[in-house]
Amino acid sequence: MREELKQIEAVLDEKVRPALRAHGGEIQIDRLEDGVLYVKLLGQCAGCPSADLTNETLVEAELVKALPELVQKVAVVQTVSDELWEQAKRLLRDHHL
Image (spheres, one colour):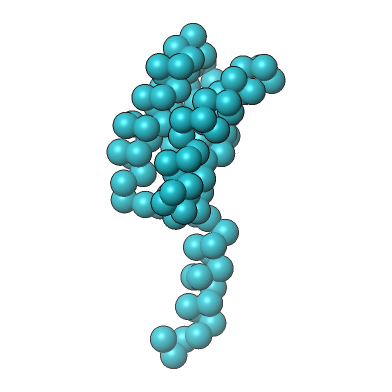
């Protein structure tokens, strides 16, 4: 499994992360189960309305093309980024807003 994740990381580094980083985003592998790669979109990509489209047109397309024997589908695990949590806490503390 470790070697498979290294292969996936290499594709993410070469084909996916540069595009995400250009928009202030990042991607992290959560797990790989039965050909489904579960990922977390982080930074500006976390919770973005275009996250599903980004996953389908960029992440899944590149991984399935490069590693069809490992990845048949990519699913985004919905999370709230640390930055968003901190922003929410600030808003709640500063109730005069």
